Image 1 (cartoon, rainbow, N blue to C red):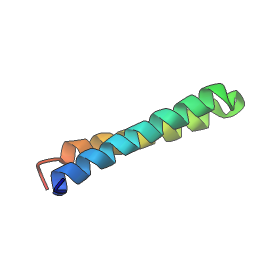
Image 2 (image 1 turned 60 degrees about the horizontal axis):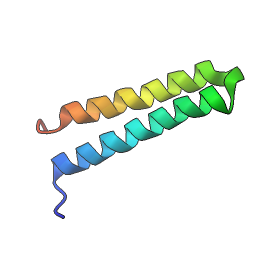
Image 3 (image 1 turned 90 degrees about the vertical axis):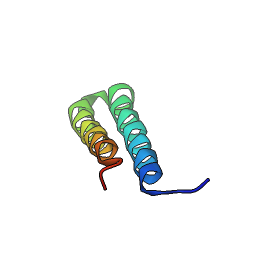
Length: 59
């Protein structure tokens, strides 16, 4: 499989989104007393993944 810029941005956005969802779920189920911080951090990861996805084909 040949990796060009679009494939790398797509894989990076997928990884960041999965990590963000995992952080949100970790805060919701394992550490409910810190769920607000976990949810903010997870939302930040998802936002960065979304930005990477928006950069696909433009860079």
